[in-house]
Length: 632
Image (tube, rainbow, N blue to C red; front, top):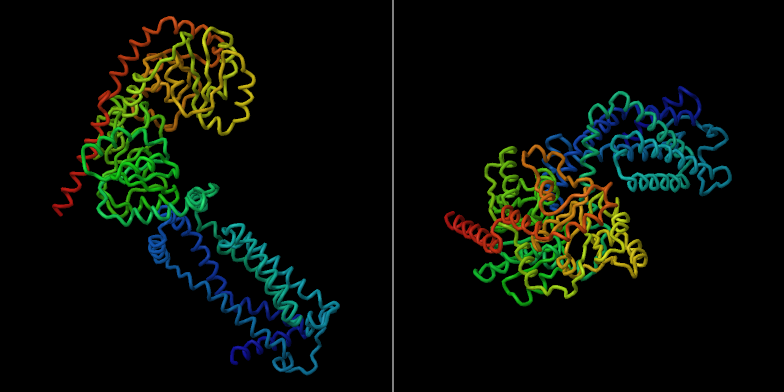
């Protein structure tokens, strides 16, 4: 072969320079690295190019997470933009393999290519014609040395190679094990001369990479900050549901429901619920729609045990689908419906996006609290909805100011009310009140950082212990989930006293039958006060702020100022006086009832009628979409 003859000619020249076969192989290896230097430079630049465009690729994968076809299509556009060809990376590999095969042929027949009879094969006590598997003895060091050189190369590449350094630990260690293992294996069956070439090639490669990084420094071309940020964004999506164990039945149901959802054409109305607990925010509106229209409601839930599946058994116009959050990403990207109703904020801000299939879908946001959305939710959390429901005039003021400040001219604000509150007031009026004349105090902390339980629960209970009323501590479900043992100990601690620790959340009767509520920044304070018209003590723990820019919207959050109207505010340092505050408030309930009734009327729209108001707007949106489509 011409190629082998050419390599033999180079080897002969190297031998004539050094006069020793071992040193000739090392010099030949160095010369081959110099000859292949243009390819090495090209590989270095190509690797930098790959890492340079990786932030765009990561964000692309995050944006279209789960949509493999779109990702592949968009990824090819990025490759074209950077003039990158993934197959081109095979060129240096092919060159290395061809070179190795040529060297094997030359080393097997040194006299033929070098032109010297009975060439001296001794090199530092090794015979370069030895084969470890055949000769044994000292020859056993041949594969060991080859393996060690491969180890040095892999460690060096993992640190210095711009592309290899960005690989996952699994890829790095996997390549290391493969390379070392392959070197050990091949070193056992090839001559010591070939192993010497392999060892020298690995060590020269480390030096070459170091030099390339000096003259073509990746840090001058790669935005490592953007790379790190994009990697974190993608990892967050990949971690969704990763540690959540699901049964085979759940996985099968999700797969079947996903397929069934897209098999249905002309879907007019879709509701999405994060869990079974969110149905209560839709309940009144869904019941109104079912009663007054022929619309089919497609109800997507991420809760396998959502109550909607039981409801659907007796209501044919409800079509429920179980779709977990990870699969939901793709489903929402491919959404094809006229109207989508959600309580989930931040659509389009993170992994859950508006549809890429239909740009004319009407997305409607339904709040699941009465308080300030501007302060208790992230910035721009509802900006990508077409319509937003307002529970009352103070939410409307926030929406209007947000539209003005951030230029959201087309976002519609609907004077809705709060269907859940209407349901709670109705149920409260129907409920049987306890016969006991003994007063009850309910303590219901939030789950946010530095809440009552974190800061002062023991002091509050000490101040209320031994009084003439009952005290019930009803922690947030997440508290019980993470601190179950602690609450079990508290039950034992307060057994036989006027204090009860409640960890069963199947009923809300205990909350609404209480004569006074103690909380911090939990939204239960407003719901309790507006349902029962009984007072609330707000312990002034650190404020719950999800949007650090909330002051940019020049509307005082209702969460802050309303606490002085629906009850009293007690500072954390004064909770030892809680008993006195409670006694004073229980003696004058009429004062607070009057204040609460007035502020409720002032701050909540359409009391008792919000279900119909919200449902009629949703129906109107569906009808408008149908008319628009007919015109086309």
